[in-house]
Image 1 (cartoon, one colour):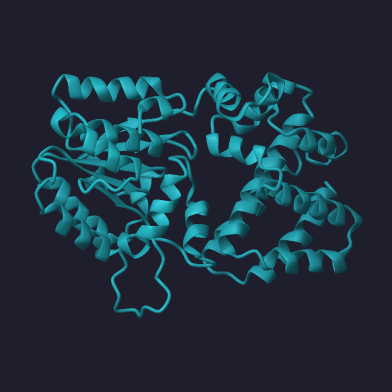
Image 2 (spheres, rainbow, N blue to C red):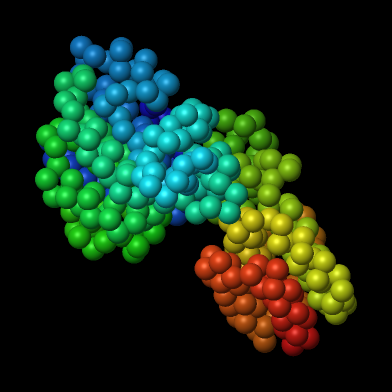
Length: 372
């Protein structure tokens, strides 16, 4: 994979290549930034860059990297408990190596939700446990097969449990020779301070709007007007831009559920609101949390729509059409409380609260908030 396959992030790429050229590459880098900004894409491209520097092995290395099966490139990532295993099984990335390879072969831009779906996670939460750190220690104890770097990409290290994190810390404190760790993180505040202190942090910005527009035009053949609107809605997130291209994408389902909730709440139709909550109950916890995140965005956007400043609004055409009649119901008297309500329900769902009760109670509270 080449750096030219990365969308934007030119400053970060230049910084990384300069580190190598000047002989000051640290043994552990922490890539931090929002979802969809291309952190993993840069990590995979940089790993390819490091593993193909030796000209005597370059052709062979490039062939292996095309299938992401280079023996000196190690991926660690959160997993669920494989079906048919008991509590004694120490989960590790290799449990889902086939699924992971199929995902990254499709491209370097993907989300945790897509990974959970690929594993068939249903309601399970993915994490990295001691089985993963033990596996990594074992693999890194072996010599490089090509005589150069070994690269360990750890995707979402904030999902490590404490035992796994402490063992990774020991690796970072005493790294094997010629080993580079690339930690790709969205929530660095959840990492151990000792891990943070042993990595060099590189912060990624959202992808510039013009870069998203260019990629949509060049890679997807989208006309300039549509590319401009999609790029504005995506707000620097390439995954969101791709979602907008998918006519059956999840956000359209969430939009329909948002409209239904608000209309039924306005009508004070408790019977149908109960049916609405039962329908949402069937989504599963991860999808429920994604839906609530979408609801919070819609509340913010509808509130901003009232100010008649198009540059401040990031909605699709369908969402704008709905906002023309609905936005006035989101005002300074209820906007904060409504978003706090959705955030609280999302937190409770994540802590295994009864989703059916939570959503019906939330729907009834929306009725009261819309009256303000």
